[in-house]
Image 1 (tube, helix red, strand yellow):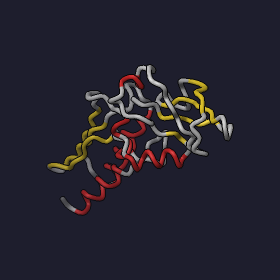
Image 2 (cartoon, rainbow, N blue to C red):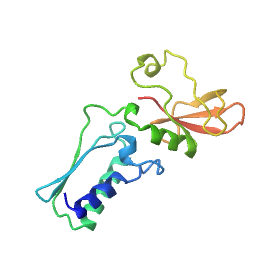
Image 3 (tube, rainbow, N blue to C red):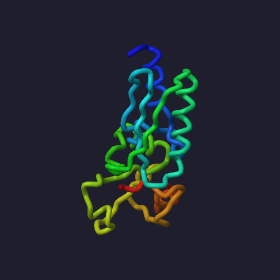
Image 4 (cartoon, rainbow, N blue to C red):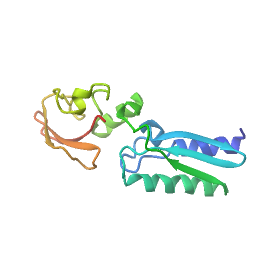
Length: 163
């Protein structure tokens, strides 16, 4: 791989999520594959949920990087299977979410009781660390987040739902 090709790949990996700009599409687990073969850029992405409006923005960012480096041949493929899961979010990204003020998913999707709402969910406040919180609304600033409120510091915050 040439140095120029590595620059293109590194820039695509560093694309920030449009809805949560402190984490990249790679850290979020949206970027599934990236390669340059026979002078063609191949990128495979998967949405956090079907119909996610951020995907068009991400595709546009990828195209802009390809065109910036005069890559005339590029192919962006969106795959829906396997479905994205919060298990694909890196630990570093979860910490970035918390520092940014969004409570990261507290469990893995392996615990189906959490996904079905049949297990008690303890969501710690990303601002003060208190576990004394309550859900205000199942939907927060985006469909993949719920709105919570801390009963100690009284601040509202988003919780990235475990999917």
